[in-house]
Amino acid sequence: MVTASYAFFEALSEAGVSHCFVNLGSDHPSILEAMVVLKKENKGPQIIVSLQFRELQWCLIILNIANHSHQTCPNEMVALSMADGYARLTGKPQCVIVHVDVGTQGLGAAVHNASCGRAPVLIFAGLSPYTIEGEMRGSRTEYIHWIQDVPNQAEIVRQYCRYTAEIKTGKNIKQMVNRALQWACSAPAGPVYLYSAREVLEEEIEPYELIQEHWNPVEPAALSSSAVATIAEALVGAKEPLIVTGYSGRNHKCPEALVKLADTVKGLRVLDTGGSDMCFPADHRAWLSLRFGSDKSIETADVIVVIDCDVPWINTQCHPSKSAKVFHIDADPLKQQMPVFYLAAVARYKADSYTSITQLNDYISGSLSSKLSDSSFNERWESLGASHTKKLEAIAAAASPKDDDSFGTAHLCQVLRNIVPKDTIFAIEAVTNTVFVADNIQATLPGSWINCGGGGLGWSGGGALGIKLATEAENGKGKGKFVVQIVGDGTFLFSVPGSVYWICQRYGIPILTIVLNNKGWHAPRRSLLLVHPEGVGSKATNEDLNISFGPQVPDYAGIAKAASGGTVMAEKVSKASELEDVLKRAVKCVEDGTTAVLDAVVMPGC
Image (tube, rainbow, N blue to C red; front, side, top):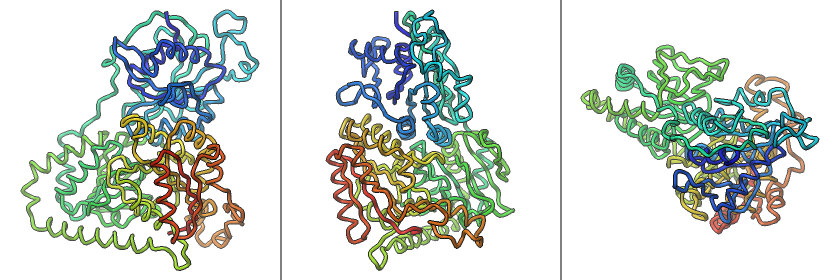
């Protein structure tokens, strides 16, 4: 006999979940018991399944990668952000375990981020016991069990989750876990939420197994043959064809497929208006970089194909011409969780981005190849090359340091790009500075750029740790890819740095954090000016608007150093002449296995 909790962990392992990020509480006695049993049986981080060992690592959590000792993650927001970062890089679902209603609430904005960012994560929470007199093992034993007994715990997160359900018996706990994971991993992917009372988790059941291949997620959908022909002919026949995307690069095969499409339909350009993932390489002449809401290419294009994008343009700032034909391909083209959303598209398709792009490539190369031999395509190709060169030159010129030796985010990222390893992964949460970061980092490798999936600021601290863990799980401890977190100063405070940098030092997860210190929140000012450009507030100071951190700003690097017990490298830089040396020291520190945090004082708006 085994407990339901034991079977829960077996189910996760059998389904391919590699990490659990856990914050434990009074609802988890059987969870703790199962963890100890698994360890004593020498099954974990390995669990025997069908006479095979499957790896299940309890990281921060439960079992440290290095020594398999029991560990914990001291904040739910950080825990879910770590799972989010791990899942978004790998595409593999991860698990977060939290404590009843309060732990569920502690997840906070991370649930929003995982939902908007389509991160496949299973969240599990306990419930207060439902028996009082000791009728069952797991009955109430503590004062807090009455206080945390709420009418509808799942309602806290239901609108953000693809699926929520209560596990009511251990006898079908594996089926419940796998059904939840089917939802989490089927497009559009996202978080799911399971919950169960202590009595159920303590239930003893006969060990059993599922046939795992019966629980695969829904296969990616394809375009119909008529849709492929319609879109392909429109692209080839267009004078200014444009692809607008946001997170198609989540599938690391998509950028290459888009490159093939751009190489075939010469003159096609690719614009990123989401910034979620590296969707198209910056070294390709069709690259238009990242722009939020507005770009001239949208206004001049005669055919636009929107692929996996939530906000291709903001109508009050920019929109296609009335004569433009717009096609929308998305795993969720109706945006079912957005009450207000619409595009003036001639057709919309619920289909997988990579599958669709591959179909278009095959059709164009086969059925439309003769049309592509027209000399106009070569002329467009040369024109794109010249435009791309001019764009890169303009970006470089704008990134120059100031005459007083100060610098902006653009210059910082330009210098950084030339120092870090070529396969560096960037965890971005730069808010108003994001476009400057994108223009100057100029990501080219699939999976090398991951932005916060939603608007819940504070993701990048835990997100960067999860990304780093994922690369070490693939390549071995100490052999993971170099990970850089680029974060705004206000967002850094939202990321729970006291938890993030304790985790960094405790478990040896070295990352480079660069805090863009522009001395306050600049996003609210931008929002104000978009609505009241000539209003009284437009002339107000940051202090008047209560968005300034001055005159005495927080010691961001010092906060990280204190949280790490003094082990983190913490430095501050405000002079362009010192920037390269400081960055080189920070990169070397991280490569040697210690986290580095750089407080970079940047000029706003550049």
